[in-house]
Image (tube, rainbow, N blue to C red; front, side, top):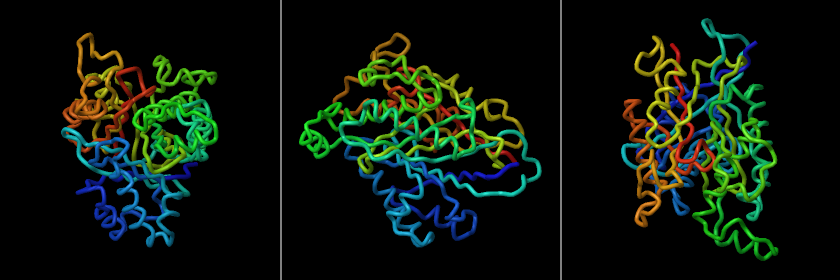
Length: 367
């Protein structure tokens, strides 16, 4: 018996504070605000520590949805999983993807097989000294399992993308840890983003059985042979816990959508992008009655400073962060294959796919 129906709506934005597209769909009745479970967005900031476009976008969405839900903006943030990824370099286009979920009693005619399902969970708040370490890994693993249960997914093979928003360190947070006699994984706010992303990704890998659970603190950002094939983590200053969104396919879903994924081995792995599209009936010879909704991917500058044996300078550029280079490169590759720059590409893929690569997932809608 199918119990849920998931909806997916991709909306272009004119700026991080633009909520007009979402409000139009709510006014028209296309989206019931009470059904909104998660919002994933790309904002046109720098993607760094001081990228406040992420917080601005969340604040704008929460404020706009608050009267529709009879809640305060803060309560909206607690109810809906907002994940904003900064950085739309190159041809990437700012947008949001809204995921809705509602209960259904019977399956609509023509729905068969496993369909898109979504689940959400949160960890507890972390202490600054826990970021990038085993505590963050363990708590994330528990939250991933809880989100799977919320999505009605029992088999890890049916999980195709796990999006996580995780914290980072600030000078104030580092000082707070020091005042308690504790050291943080790093004192650099920028480096802490990588530590938090990496530990969160390893938490996904533990939850899904992709690696063993005996990972130690020293493995984070060192053992790049340990990774998840479906994790996508994005760090930000606006929270101190992890928000976990699991996307997969389930027999309990009556959705008109499907999701599939592949793993890019490096930043120019076009074959993996094509494989992800083909997994949901798209690509060069698409199945009839299907259309692309969105592609979600991670981008990373390979830590050895090369791609397929040739040197790159992304890690040596002091003017532009390597994550910005990577987003532009991978974004251009995916946009060319998908025929649109309105795709979700996030930089910083530590332990998210093999070193220098990353997961890529595609969602298609069936007619």
